[in-house]
Length: 146
Image 1: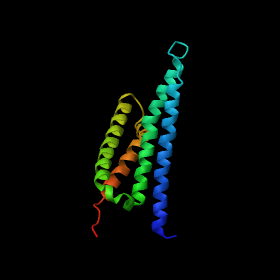
Image 2: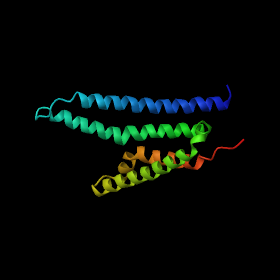
Image 3: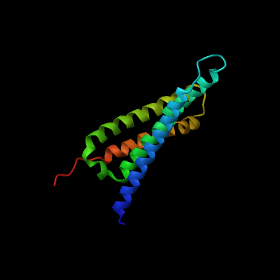
């Protein structure tokens, strides 16, 4: 097995892992929403737990899955060579959004009295996603014509 086949397998493994994480988390979130009882004072805790689960999905699971997709692209870019325009546009949006959200959350954390190192460490899924998106933007090139 040569190095190109190993890179292709690694890229597919990263992408498959990202899809599996998003699928599992989405199914868990949907099933939790479906099984919520009618709202009352006694079931208020379940609604709070569901809200926290939504925040975990948005602020941890999605950036992790997107980072895995980007890592798969960075390992073997020829797999996505024909989609380079979409990859460039999406990676630019992810880089701007990731750095913007990380900066906003760090700023809000500092304003609310959180130690700056903890605020930066807490936003690591977003800035890691933004760094990988920046690298993917730089690595994407037009398809070579034969």
